[in-house]
Length: 388
Image (cartoon, rainbow, N blue to C red):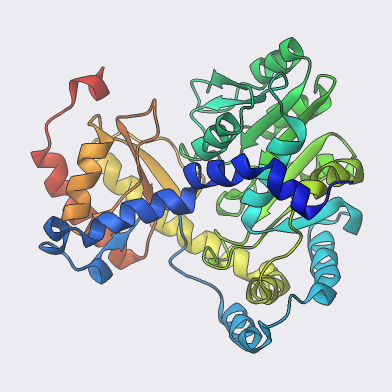
């Protein structure tokens, strides 16, 4: 029997790896630089515009804020009795069965559990380059085999090459982020459909749909239908992005019941009551909240892309709440200069070292970004390595 104590013992390495491979930790490291004297000379930390971590500046909805505030007084208990209602609410929202749902501390917990359950030293995590590299780093930190294939010329996942890698390895876990982080590009539904229908034996497809709500409905289709068809597919979602609850840490995954059973031993199955109730409130208003926020983000993103085109600065056509801009300069150096002037931008995503990931902020945020970017872009010389 796998007990909690045994899990902690056997996965001591997992805790270390999580510290190494954590998006919040990387964001924290970047933001700690804002306390450096050279940065404070330009802007106090509270004045910095944070466009580095794909957060939603709209924050939680008023109903979610009220639910979380009211829940603070109940924080003395775990509230296990409320978890079934949360599971049922997710199942109803996604038109799946409750036994096909599991929730966690952000969608990251479900993704981490999938890596533990479905990869090994011989069965690889199979994905693209570039994609959400925290997932890749975590697998490697845990001693798992990793195989990556390049994105296509259209910045989509090459689903046939992913399947080929799984066939060669005798199975594994295929990870697809759609829309993809950091490129903000999408993989067409027909390709995902082909992959789900042609998974090699002993292979599970993990679809990370953290950003799916930012894409226009006609541009993308959720892979949740494959869960309903009982294929070997896991779909993860988070309340961190469109719902603006990054600090609450609530997410979920949907999968056939047998896959859920395989994931369960690696899940804590507990989230804070504030996150629980805030997420419940968000789900209750998703039919109006999501379209409204999608439209507002789309407007800001479109205006930003118009501005880039006006300056003849290339970018990848975006479908999430961020844009990958081809600055043809070293991103690390460029980002430090931006931060020194009061704007935090995305970290490097090798091998795309000449591309800058920019999260969409408020109108005021983007005005400040354009001003600072223009100055740094004009003063920073082209990097030979990035331009090649």
